Image (cartoon, rainbow, N blue to C red; front, side, top):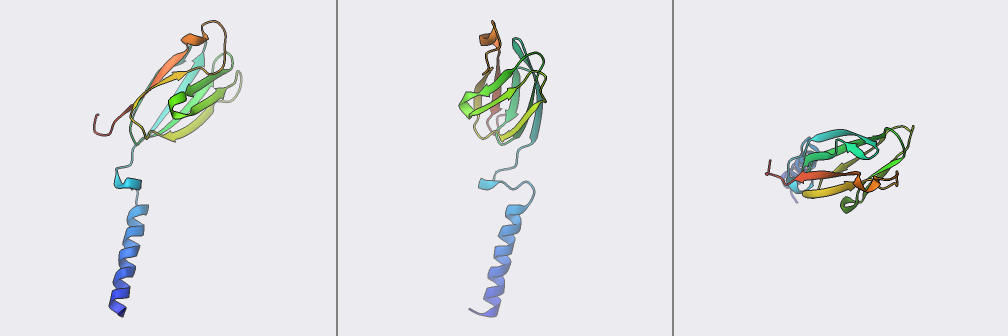
Length: 130
């Protein structure tokens, strides 16, 4: 290889590395979603808010706090489950909303009569739908 060719290859490789590390860059070349934050209060027998709406590709940060007893906050289809204990510190987790759809939320820790009514929904809008 000639010196000019080696330099050209090096510049091209560096350009690719910098482009991949640039803000807004995501695997697959799509635009980076926004950070959506929610604080959910779990209490007998409801979640407030009980409907979370985000866009596909968003980073979602959910903090769940119990107002009365131990509650679970579970989105089975996305394999998300956390436990918010009575008198405990709020539990926070973060995930990327990769799949579009409407996903049921349920309390995964029995909390008394009415437990089965403790429901919500996570709506992930497909890219370009909003």
